[in-house]
Image (spheres, protein in one colour):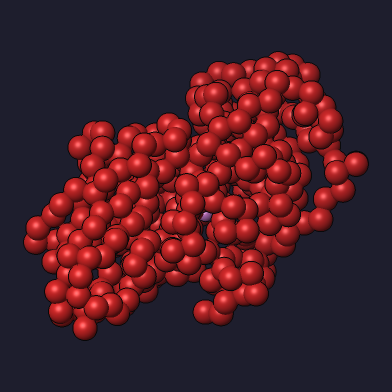
Amino acid sequence: MASSSDGLIVHSSEPFNAEPTLARLRSSPLTAPDDFYVRSHGNTPTIDPGTFALSVEGLVATPLSLSLQDLRAFPQTSIEATMQCAGNRRADMLAVRLVAGDPWSAGAIGNATWSGVRLADVLRAAGADVSLQHYVGFSSLDDIEVDGASFRFGASIPMSKALSPEVLVALDMNHSPLTPRHGYPIRIVTPGFAGVRSPKWLAAIEVRDTPSDCPVQAEDYKLLPSDIERVEDIDWSRGVTINDLPVNSAICVPAAHTRMSAGRLSVRGWAMATARDIVRVDVSANGGRSWRQAELEPRRSHWSWTLWAIEVDLGVGEHELVVRAWDSAGQTQPATPDETWNIKGYLSAAWHRIAVIVE
Ligand SMILES: Nc1nc2c(c(=O)[nH]1)N[C@H]1C(S)=C(S)[C@@H](COP(=O)(O)O)O[C@H]1N2
Ligand SMILES: [Mo]
């Protein structure tokens, strides 16, 4: 694993996949675009904003072709929302048994203010048939190659989610135009769903009576049962489409394997339960034998993460710091990653544990 000049931890350079260090991630409630993880399946397309047009098609009364100016003429909305990859924290599952995919630490998550047009407004303008049996499909301009097959990125969300006011056709991230790596000139932002349902470099919106048939939707980002232990044995029809994400949390500060002298240590991190509130964050300084509650920062938006902090006193020796979060339904995280192990390493959300050494 190499570090790029801009300081992200790079898992692969082509396609570009990288995450910030956890200390950097925790340094601000709003993640700057340069600190925000990048998960790309293919190239970063160069798109001419002057000629760009978004098409809206499929089960609609009036197909549309919308320039960036047309999109800016719709009512504009901003929403602060956390985006998280379904593969975030995969490294913990990899430590249990081999999994397919990049070994993300706990940094494939970021929180930003997204601005643009409500997807529901665009669908309404096209006279979409908004039956709740329908899906809204998205196709993008990046080229992906997997095992010799080439295709463009595509994904879909159910109509019920597409009509929800938080789902945006976004033009701006933290009040500046999207950067190329994050989808310039436009992307979908689907708060509360895994990042894969937020297509970057969006080219077309299609109202459909079936989910997208792009392999990204049809053959990937599904939770497979644990008896599928090898990539060769994957049968996608046995997988469940991943949309919303389980309650999760991580310790960002201190870094794992920090050495310090005895005394007080500030422990800080993130917690996330997508659409639900985080109601409690427990921290242990003895591997999970006893717990204290961290202080929660007020949640800034219904769709954003909850940042937490706690001070612990540590004597000489090696200590295992652990965090687990609880959501408003009383759900918490599994103690170990083998409880939810799956061959693709998705939804890795076990108690996050780090060792610190006090000398
Ligand atoms: N067109 C396109 N959109 C995409 C992807 C992609 O590879 N191509 N990756 C998806 C995945 S898996 C995630 S987690 C998020 C990551 O968004 P980011 O790179 O802006 O953090 O984008 C999603 N949208
Ligand atoms: Mo992702």
